[in-house]
Image (cartoon, rainbow, N blue to C red):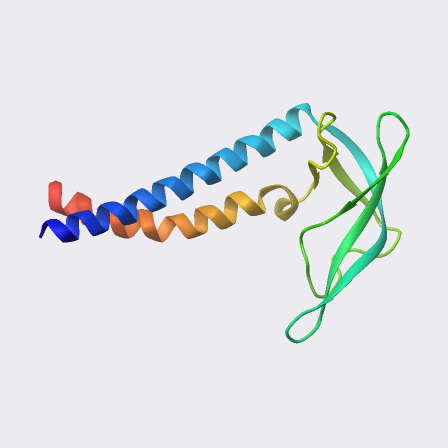
Length: 137
């Protein structure tokens, strides 16, 4: 009996850790939206990589920072078909102190890390938490 409590306690702990990490990611995004600099970027090109069945496209954005220097940002999101058209304007936000902290202002651009981590955490929380609640309440 004690081994099962330990096992489900570990599952619940893993879920709690992942949920906390998702929350931290969410807070970082909120901080970036609040204090970051919003601007418009233009899709200049696509980085193409071979997927299992199709080519995957990662857009490369070009934008001017506050000092009027051109910067580029390659999205970490790969998709098929390409998510944007060449020359399309896209709203982005970047950290003025850390120029590699750039995100597109879209749901997946801003919150993909938080959503994916919480989706992974949820089964651990439900399974571990339900068993522990059943045992102790």
